[in-house]
Image (cartoon, rainbow, N blue to C red; front, side, top):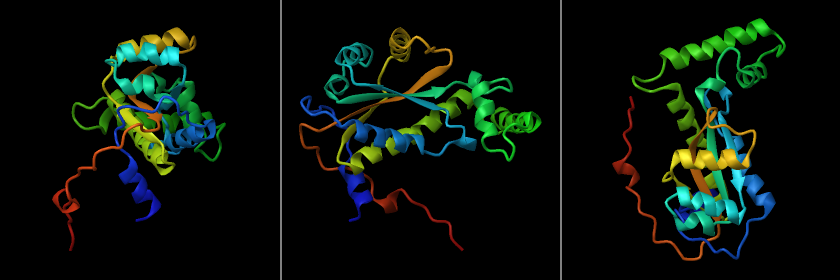
Length: 218
């Protein structure tokens, strides 16, 4: 079994972490970098990672995460945000910078305008029925989450992805602690708890590959 497969089997939704063990800062950066290097539509990278290792703030977050034990017992709690659609307009500084860096001449404002409009046209006309730009941006953040969970497991660090939280409550806590942060510009995709297991997990249960795969071949 290669190391990647070992990591995939190692990873599980850890519900309780060993509070005496803390993750080294270099390891946290390794995990975050896996998120940074994740794919995104048109390379727009519509995410931002808030890393919480303060026991006080983790305790506050626990109150809006239904008091799940992993929130306070983990070493680091990562709130994965996605940029909302108002960050992607022809006038958006973030959007224009993201597009400019992909162009032969990053100072060519006309080319930036054309490419930005092309990307906006897709979000306005190319998404599945009922899917909004905000939904698409949020789903892209899940790609970064998956890579961070796998990267942690690759280094024998446990994790748990939490979708059970009061969105507005998490936003309010971030606004209280980060003066420049606004829920008008960001939404919460997932929260990721990282640390070291205190109990061994149950054997992994998955459907056999043959039951979830269909091949279309000549």
